[in-house]
Image 1 (tube, rainbow over the protein chains, first blue to last red):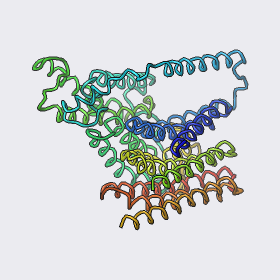
Image 2: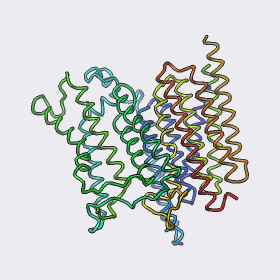
Image 3: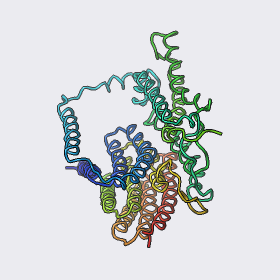
Image 4: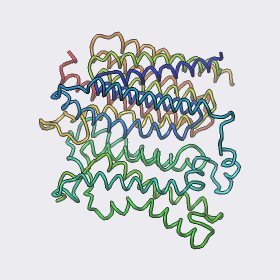
Length: 313
Length: 96
Length: 97
């Protein structure tokens, strides 16, 4: 029992306890706060497991955008919860508990029954990392070895935006998402929204740039940039853009679009779809990642802003 | 040195767990938000120490993102949701 | 030279842990929201500040050191803003009395 083992056991116990409390607490708002703290502790566990890329994503999403979405939803639910008196019946709650517990048990069994050593492609990934000129194996998998999945993932983000926009009423179609935020222009929030974004933009770009050789990448960087944009909107310093804007739509499709163009280039001039020419692999991948950074930041920001509610005058 | 830093991580983690107890007790939402803030800062400290102990330099980047976004949960708490305006007008000195 | 560095680290991190301890005790024991907020900002600013100060001698180079310092700066900014916002909310809802 080394000190490190004690630390790991303690961390796991704290996380499990918090998870159980988050499920058990009756008040939605408390459960949300518990869940945000839970996400932070999970980021610590990912670092301990040496999965820093995942920890970065957890920190960028759970610390920024996720917390805003969940707390906003909890605040809205609280207004409706006060009016409703009916709770779900015991049978419904028991079935939900049994269903969730059996899924958790099935996952645990699957993990515990893995052969030792577990089947993995990690050695192949590491041995081929020289092919792209980038040292971060996660970036290699996402952008080169399984580039198709990443491209389709960005298309899914676009579909999500279309889904959110389609909730708009007919009069608001093409207008600005959400309501205009009001804040004191000389207040704390406005001060923060003027001071933090410049530093945040630098951090976002740094996370993208370092992702070639160290943990990081376009998604984490994009989430940071989206959070900064959201802060400026929440402080009332800027308004959400009208969704009919041509520039906005160009930025939204730039990431997957460039990915598709490079992929088709590989089909026309090379052996296969998304086959990068060896000499240009790294610049091409970084170019796609820059476009994806803009796309991801804009998409995440707009997903949080919600459906258009005001006609754009 | 490593033993000392690991012990420090353990102690800060204990504080973090006690901060969780404070979340559980409440009594108001403001207290819960404060506990979240404390857990965020303690988590950043744990990450910095862990990065030094285990030799994972990228842990500092995780801490950097957490520090940058440390205000977001509290801002969302004060704004009471993204698309809800304050019913009373936002006068000077009122961040809503 | 490394002995001096280690002494700075031990002193800094110990002071940081102490302030985290003080902040947590304050958060658990103080009677009302505003005094608890005061305890919390001690942990935020001084606790993390001393940890960063203690870890500075252990960093590899200038970039890592700057990263550590900017983390502390971000947390200082966050702590100051969040304290303001929470205190105002507490006062408006009348729990700050």
